[in-house]
Image 1 (cartoon, rainbow, N blue to C red):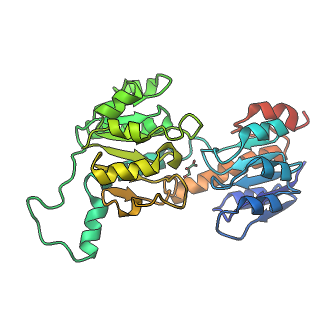
Image 2 (cartoon, rainbow, N blue to C red):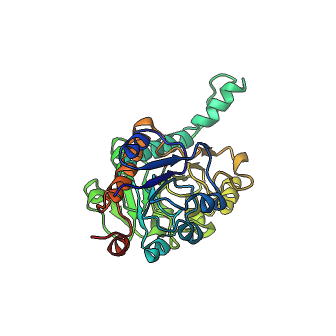
Length: 328
Ligand code: DGY
């Protein structure tokens, strides 16, 4: 059973070639921008598989418009852009690309930790503006990294990879989460309640998926628990942080700074965030390496191809849909 496949945005190889080798027809959007929900609704009809991106709002209306589609294969680890409950109800499989961006995202979390505490972006701005007055004893001081406490919110794979790097910086490690993490425990990390982590850490790095429970997990109250010398790092999902509250705290000096790769309403930022000199702001680059994006492309293609061939896809996030979705 081959079929027709929609790819919602131009993506790196190898997915286009791999899928073309199996599918009867591949339609790849040539527009290098996110499609709106209306555009998705208009375009998804008549396909057996849709390879979509983390910014595609695959809500109930899109899933219904997709008619007999068998799988939405997200080229992302997160799948908060897809109404998985509705997909399951309709018997549509949803897949993701787990594990593939762990190291790249941990590297970027570390880029933010170092950039915000050691004022790397700030310093770059000084140089380019010709404002460097020469070395000064009080000029552009930042915060230490080595030996400071790193708090990891969420005990998953990326948190563990961030912690592995922190060992080299001799950082005491704490983490919060519903379950113990043997991997973090093995690195000497201590599991604590979130409030204790916020109050005791010099760097708070977020590594939770976006769910109803984690939306605004870091709100004004949580930010208020952090030390004025502490830094917040977010490479997870923007809505985990109440961005307006973060702007207020950054402006009032409630915390020392923030390193952000993700935003509440991407690609927009909260009013005032761009004016916060104590924030390092990146445009969602966590997985943005040639190697990682190519691996994401390959894994998404493997999921699509499995479904086209009548096999269970390797990275199914809604196993309950499997029962009804395909014969056999
Ligand atoms: C993901 O895959 O969830 C990442 O945010 C992409 O960078």
